[in-house]
Amino acid sequence: MFKKYYNPNLQYAKNGFRYNNYTYFLKEKFGERIQRILIDGGFTCPNRDGTKGKSGCIYCNNKSFSPFVNLSDNSIKSQIMAGFNYFNKLNAKKFIAYFQSHTNTYAPVPELKKKYYEAIKFPEVVGIAISTRPDCLDQDILELLKELNNITYLNVEIGIESILDKSLNWMNRKHDYQTTVEAIEKLADLGIDVTGHIILGLPTETQNEMLEMVKKLNELPLKFLKIHHLQVIKNTPLANIHKNKPIKLFDYNEYLEFVSKFISHLKQDIILQRIFADAPLELLIAPNWHKRSPEIIMDLQKLMRDNDLYQGKY
Ligand code: SF4
Image (tube, rainbow, N blue to C red; front, side, top):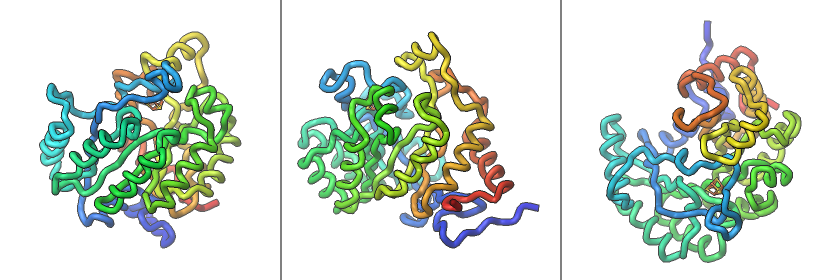
């Protein structure tokens, strides 16, 4: 018989969850269900426009950052309104505007300011999330983020991807790990809630090296973490590499086992926003686990329960 799990040190691990879950954080913070509305702010990326590179990170296909609406009028307002309509059917009344596509701090400050403020002017929008690269946060942009953080709930998401420069080079990220550390520390010093994105299963790293990553992540002032497994997406440099010489990718059970161990080494005040990658099936080459997200989450909870694992155990 399944005993309800309760761990007083894991504030947002409710209903049997064995790790802090972002959904419970949002519910506690805002008192009700919150949905994220994905927004394409029309930005580009220094690793695509030639400033740092043209081909982008090897796994990146911008279509996989798919805002859920395809609108003829792609203004921020239209995207927000479409989000309201979509989520109202699911009974959500409050929203976080999530600037997800490309590098969302990569534009002149007045343009950034106009777009961010356009998104937060709706009373239903209770916060804003901004996803970016660690090397696109100069002092003026940090000032703008500080201002934003004083008037709404702000979450800045930083692509860490790996703590090893050999992996960052392999991915063609065009920045090093030290840049990431400095960006996260500057944001956290401003009182901003920071998310780190990481990728597990890079062919440049052993499982021991990936577990070493947890120690480094535990030292960073991160509020949230998004864990992705490496996926090969169509129309990316990685797809060509994989076609010429297939890369060993996590199979389903192997990933669940590894990520459960990874989470067990993670300190107990980090909140998990994501525990696996979730590219649209029409773009996914491999690995295709033929599993839906709720099933993956349930299987992971069961595995952690059966092995008495929980976030922070180690
Ligand atoms: S993953 Fe991000 S940083 Fe890399 S090319 Fe794509 S948009 Fe640019």
